[in-house]
Image 1: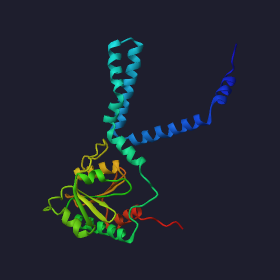
Image 2: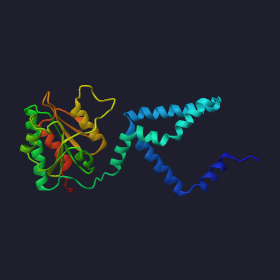
Image 3: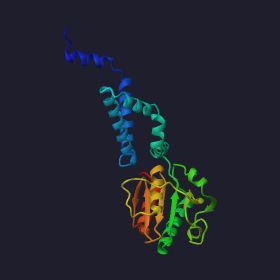
Image 4: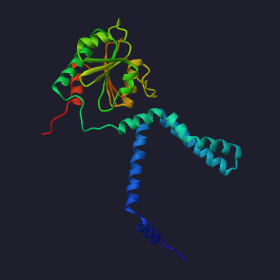
Length: 262
């Protein structure tokens, strides 16, 4: 009995449920987003390594290489733990991005807008004096984990306080300041260092730490170079450098001010 291709396709379509279509679309979106997140990171190379292992498993079974097959199968038995260890930064960043809400803005009140101006003035003053600094401004994603390993503070944001924190004689100058709303919540905080392969070798520890935090959270991180006095801003794994006061004000205002819809 000969069954036409047309008949086979029609039978398949009749058996296809709307839930199957939704399932396929959701899985496609999830896989696409995962590939975007690991693109250009060390996770992409690790994923290629796992692909090689999969090909090795197929090859060893086909040619009956029992020892090699046993070794690969033993590794696959622990694959879940291995993935968690190897892709820990990417998993943490993905979970943080999933938990973000884009319906609210952090800095909205007049008091908080004033704090934003204080941050800008302090950053430029530090740059003019070539005093190294790193300032992390919290948005929707909590920076609690980084605050806990720093020195707790509860100070109102002001130019004077920030300058005193980053002064070379200060015991907590060698670390990041974390700002939440209009309060400085911690200083001397240590941030994760980015390990991206495309990062310029000319970037110092502060810039790498700022990029590392911006990759894992939605925080906006300001960096002042101790060597050149250059002001940079890190957000979503990207770095903008050589910012003057006007440009810095425009960027931060756009990021933190809720715009009225007319």
